Image (cartoon, rainbow, N blue to C red):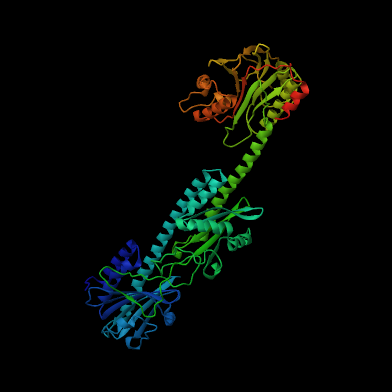
Length: 638
C-alpha cells in the first residue's frame, strides 16, 4: 500500500516518464498509486495493435505483490467498438455485463470485489491503442477515479511520444552519420567498378540485408554489383541481379520521375524474393511499422515489470510468422538523368526499414559518385586516346639501334600532358631522336604538342639539321602567338664504318640527355639553348661526341628528374646511380625501370614522365644508307 498522496505520486510518475526507455517501465509507478485510491481493488491495462489484436495485458490486485502479465497475439475483432479516436475516452461499465469478446480484462475484473469498471481508452500512435482500467466498489469517488485515470494516461502518452521522438532523433543522427560516411567512401574512388562495389558494401548490413546495383546502359539495365549479409545468399542475389527476368522487366519499366518503390507480399509473387531464405522471427512484433504494411501476423513477446507472473494466452491467438521480405528500388539520378538503380532487400522488422527520404538521399549521393566515376572514365579514355595520337604508336625497328620509350601520366585529373617524343629515320641513314615538353597541361598544351612534334618530324625527315629544325619551330610558335613555351632536345645518331656512332645534340632549354657507357660509366651530354616560343630569330648550336658499341643514350623530360621524395630530395640526384645499375639491360628494360623507379620514389610532383632510350649495337650498314623512300616506309610503320 502506497502512503504518498496522489499529487506526489503523479510527480514521481512524471519524473519516471522523463527517464523511461519504454512505456512498460512506468507500470509500477502507475498501478500502485491507482490501487491506493479509495475503493479501487484492481488495475488492469491492455495493449492493442491496429488490427485489433491483443498484444499485452497486465493486472495487479490490491494486496498482491506481483502483477499477472499476459503476452498474446489474440485476434479480437469485437474490440473494435472500444477503439478510441483522437482523444482518450473514459467509460463506466458494470463488471457483470462485460462481453468477453470485447473485454479480455473481464477474467480479472470478475475476480475483484468491485462491481464497476472505470476505463480510459487512448491511442498511443497510429500503430495501436491501449486501455487502463480499474475495478471499484460503491465507496469509490468515481469522478476522482476518472480524473486520476486521465492524468495517468496523459503521462503514459507523453512518455510514449517522447520515446518515439528520441528514437527518431537517434535514427536521424545515425542516418546522417551513415550518409556522411557513405559520401566519403564513395567519393574516395574514381574507378567505376570500385565505386559501385563501395555503394553495395556500405548499404549492407547498415541499411538492408541485401543490395543490388544496376547501371542504365543503351540496351537497358546492366547488373554491376551485389552483396548480402548472408554469405550463402550472395551468389543467389548476384544471379538474380544478372539473369532474373522479373527483376529485369521491373527495372526496365521504372520511369525517370519515379521515387523509391516498396514491394512486399503479393507484389513479390514470381520474383526471386518471394520466398527469400534467411527470414528471422520478429522479436518486437506489435511495435513495427514502415512504408509497407505486410498485413501478416507478428511474433509473440512477453513484457512487463520485474517480478511479474508471466504467461502466454493461446486462445484465439495467431501463429507467429517469419519477418516478411520487403524490396525497395530507388532510381540513381544525377545531374538531371538516371544513371541506374539501387535495389535493397530487407528481412527485418518494419520498424527497422529506412524511410523514403533516407533512401532518396542515399541514392542521390550514390548516383553522383557513380556519375563522377563514369565521367572520369570517359575523360580518361578520351585523354588516353588523344595522348596516343600525340605520341608514336611504334618506334622504327632496326638492327643498328635498340630503341624503346616509356610514358607515365602523372596528373591524377588526367589532363592531356605536354610531353612528346619521336624517332625519325633520315635520308643519310642516320636517325633523329627528339623529346620535348610543353609548359602546362590541357587542350592548349596538346595543340602545341602536336604542332611541335609533327613540325620537327617533317623537317628532320627531309634532312634538315637539328639546329635549323628547332629554329624553324621557334619561328612557327612565334607566328602562331603561342602563349606557352616549350623545351626540346634533338639528337642525330649516325653510324660510322669503325663501329662507332656520331652523336649530335641540339637543345632548346631541355634537361641534358645521359649516356650509359658499356663499362657502366654515366655521363651527361653537353647541351644548351633558349626555350622555344620566347624570342624571335633564335639560333641553336650543336654538340658532338661518339658512342661505342653497347653504349646507351637516354633522353627524358623533367618529370623524371623533378620527382620528389618525402624528405625533399629529387630523383635527379640518384638518377646517374640508378642508370648505372641498369648496365647490360636492353632499352625496353631501362626505359620501363627508370619510369617505375621515379614513380615509386616521388611523394610529390604530378608531372608526366617521358623517356626515350637508344642503345647502339655497333652494327654498321653494309651497303650504305637506306634509300629515302625505305626510311619513310619504315617510319610509316609507327
